[in-house]
Length: 413
Image 1 (cartoon, rainbow, N blue to C red):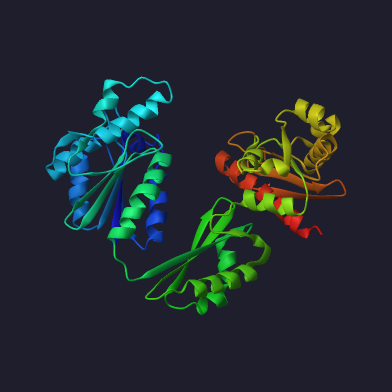
Image 2 (image 1 turned 90 degrees about the horizontal axis):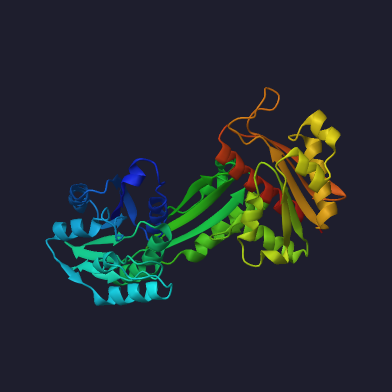
């Protein structure tokens, strides 16, 4: 079965908005055993929408459109779909009741534009949206499924998972068993990982495959199987073999995040964490506090960007800053010691670097990042030599910091 994803919106074409919807949908469709044939981005024009539909109807079994379903004049996806299918608009009372309740609960008046948003194609199956006003719409024609959803990512994801997916499972008969496991790693690149498990890959059954999905500072290994029978136990067995081979670079499985794995580990070892950040601007703290229950482990952060705050809040020596600079091994060691003294946490990490794009020197180019982590009697340091891209440097450093803290805890009794 093949699918096409069509994203609608001038904001995507001009680079104002990054299309994350297609990446997420592609992953979800892959989990269903559906191959994404094409991803297309088009403008907010009726003719472009109808032309894209016409082209993809001949090659795909599932066509998913995102965007253009809001209450404003540039949201014309519904109109284009009505014309393409030769249908008509009808007022949907259920959608209006839901929208009215949604706005009344927030003390917002219902405008005429919101009422007009309840005009829906007569031939569409309406998919309620519990997170917004625009519902999804599902069309069936020539044995194909055409799904239209809002472009807002969290609304799109909710409709797909909670409304479309149950319908898909009921309608699509599939005599194949599809199963996936994902191994989460940090600290090594995909080439190193593949070399390490090469002999295991050679004995994988033909109905299993492995994909490497790298991101900043980490790599996911997805083991997939498509078979005439349930082979989930066998996939789990190979996942365990690979996980054991890779050892401590594996931080979790499937939906685990490195921050949740780290916090769970520290919770088990009854250790507390604190962070002292400069160039990452609190991103490590943000990642940790995004996990529910993090307060059991994580105590807080000191974000000291300037020399003055490094001296005042973290007790960094003025002489160290003047002689060696804020980006130096001794500076992050003193930042860490100051954090440990100030906060009384068991384990801390300190980060200072040149994220870029400016600020580099021949001796310390952009991408020079120093980290120090550990406890009062056991401090480790590491120099990262990264790229000239500010966002990538900050993200990579935050993942490296979390991984350093994770590995440190694994070494403790």
